[in-house]
Structure formats: structure tokens, C-alpha cells
Length: 411
Image (cartoon, rainbow, N blue to C red):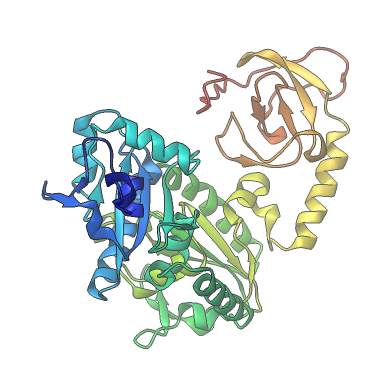
């Protein structure tokens, strides 16, 4: 029996072609036949120029892609754009070394987005050589394992996860920070042996001068660090720079009173993968035994300042119990000038977290003042002028926060 043209199409052709297109485009502007993808593992990369997380992830993915090409791996990526216009597409695609669906083919882009149920970007869907989806969380896998994740099969990821668990179980501060060529960290004026840090609570601070949230958080961390030093606590911080050049690194480190790894040190990238750092600033807390206490150091500093130290579960439980007790004296609701609806006092059990505080733009969890109608929320500590002695009266605060929510529900 003779096959018709549709039946003769390969699985990738059926997936990626359209009525009038049987090719993809390359960064050089050439047309590449979709049939050339046969027998390869494919990553469908849903991304856009206008979103900062896509801009951050794309060079990471490009590095992995180029490494796999050098290893002659049968791997390809296809960019599916969510850019707003051809100019934005051209600008963003100019930073990518892989193939793409033409920007003008809106129908194919919509079809693929719906087929793979893409609800957020960046998203990387991995297809096996037969065109079957095997991983939908490709972004996370790239951040965690880089080129080692290839060929992205369940067996390979299970193997890497087991290795990861073993590494964390045997983790020490020396294993994290020592290299074959360096047994020290640097201070503002001298080298400090890593042995000096052993037995202390250590914060590994991933940050960069070009990052506005980092610029905002660093002074807060400096204040906490200095307060703990005045109390002679065994706390230290090591700066791990994500800066793009040494000038940015030096400018960033100039404002810090703690230790650092040298700019461009090989450990920074390895530790970013090891702790699965997907955004900065990030503060990883290592306990005196060399084990990870928490990856949420930034949020804990924002919520509790130096009272978060030593960041252990027992300390956090103490702080939670104290906050529960203090919340009893807060009014159940109030008005304030930054919002048109009544704000209600809520707890973690009644809708209070996690959230982003509309006053300080930082993470919150647990008790909060929340607008039931639109989700506007503020930390208890960010509320000013609340009369705790008169819980039944309507209160007006001087909080002038305007919560610019990405969902557009409140402005």
C-alpha cells in the first residue's frame, strides 16, 4: 500500500512543520529541514526577550548546548518565541546558537504552547529521539546538572539525584570551598584560610552589582552581620560573585565587610549548580557541622533580621511561637491609605503565606495583613501606626505601599 504525504512525514515534521513550512531557521538565517532532527534528543525552548528570567537562563542553556555539541551529542534545541514583535525576536535570537521556528509562524507557536501546556517561561521540554516528551522541567535540570543531564532520561536523572543526595550527606565546608589550587578565601586586605571558617555558621552569599534586588538586600545583610559580630556570634559570610566583570565584582565587594571567593573562581559556578541557584540574591546557610541548614537565608533575614541566627529549626520555631503570641494583640482588620479595601489579619493556616509583601517587596510567610478581595498583603513588621490597644476600631496606618502585582489585580 502506498503511503500518502502526511503518513510519510516523520514525527518531528508532524510536530514542528506547518502547511507551508518544512524547515526551521538557523542563527545565520539559513533554512534547516526538520527531517535533519531525526534520531536526536530535542529541547523545545519556550522563551521571550522581555522576561528577565529568560534573559538569565538563555546564556546558561547556551553554555550547556555548546558543551554537548563539543561532545558530539545528538542533541538540538528549537526556540519557540513569545516575543512581542520581529525586532525583539531578532535581538533575542541573536544570542542563541540553536534553531528556531520563524517568528511569523504564530499558528505553530500557539499549537506547541497548547500541546505542551506551557503556563510560564522560560520552559524547556525535552523530547526523546522518537519525539516523545521525557522531561517537562528542563530548565531546572539544566540549572542543577548542566550537560551531565544529557540524555535527560529517567534513568540518567535518577542516577544524578542519587549522586546529589550522597554529596549532600557527606558535605563539609572544606569540600564546598577548597579547590586543588586554593585553600583560602579573601578578605578586604588579606587571605584567610578556610580552616578559620570550620565550626562556624557560614552564609554563602550569591550576589552581583548589576542586580537591583542584590543592591537592596546587601545593606540589610551588612547590618545583621555587624550586629551579630558585636554580639561575638560565630557567624561569617562568604561572597560568591555572579558579576559579569571584575569591575562590577570590586564595586560590589567594596560595600561588604565579610569574606569572598576571588572573582572568576571555578567554585562559584559549581556551587551555583550544587545549590540549584536560580535567582539572586541568595543566601545559603551552612551550619557548624558543615551541613546545609537552609537555602532560605535571604527570606529569614528579611523576616527576622539578626533574630534569625543561627537559622536552625528550633530558632525558627521559637520565632514563630513568639510571632503567634504577638499577633494576639494586633487588630483583626484595618484600613490604610495605600489600599482601598479592608485588610484582614491572617495566619499561615488562614491564607497568610507565602506571599510578597507590598510594603518591602520581600518574601513573607505566616502572619500578614491581607486583602481578601485582591490578595494585597503586608508583613506585620511593615505595618506602622496600628493601635494594638483598640483592636475593634478601624485603623489607619501611614504605610504608603503600592503593590505592583504582575497579575494586574491591584495597582
